[in-house]
Length: 384
Image 1 (spheres, rainbow, N blue to C red):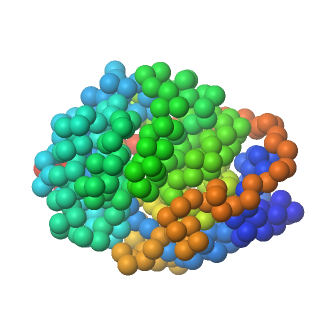
Image 2 (cartoon, rainbow, N blue to C red):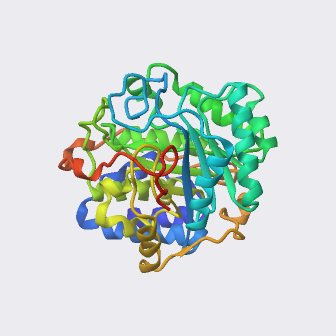
């Protein structure tokens, strides 16, 4: 297929595809799916070999968020029966993080619900970062605390944080449909705060919220311009009690096409398969390893994930290897900087032709959505 050959060549040169090409990937048929995966896999292997980076989430503060993000079970007015607790103490968070590191995680992601941290919250998290680094000096620590105010990113950096996560989630034109308590521009500003402080930026998207193909291409092109080092791709987990509980728009095939499109647009960036992979990819998860070079190990913030041992078995059985602590994730030419500055953008004309995301909607698999009842905030052992 000429399209795929062109995309592979561009990916190996770190050249940005056109919007038309990105849309065409999403519009490919199921008959062409393995060809699409194989093509994007060539790009993935060029920059990351067969390494898979493992990341582990620690939910520092669960529920009771004042923001109204429609996809989130911790949102204002959520009726989801999730765990609710206030800030974990540094030793509790460090203990939770240690379970992930023991399971093979190279990065620990510290997440707290809320609009953004107060200065006192930054102090709490700084102490937690110190406790984690004291026990595991080589582990990467990424903070995800919401919108940052001036100076807070610098304080997190000084405390030992390596990265900051703040996702764009969806296209700017549809952002107001999922959240009204803050703006798309607020999110962009926070990512730039993190970058300005010297933190590695992590910013991605959520697919499956009823968006169009054009929305998906818009957000990934916006991310490419924003230039994070890591792009997590989440697939909506439709948790009962949230406004989007009825959104079951994804099939495993569509999820794989989305991941392939992201890899073609961000060839040498850490593309992370994040929340919802078990729900929407199901038995097709191993194919996704040919597209992404990073996954979350174990559970998510408020829902349970695949067993940690099953993750490790899947990686080994698919012929991949867990990335060691002494290995640098990003290609040398990035040098901690971004792809956009190193890659010549294509001048090809953009196209807004889309295919309906809902045309291939899957049957609701509510049996695959399990609220987390173990790990951080509980007396039960974590999943790692």
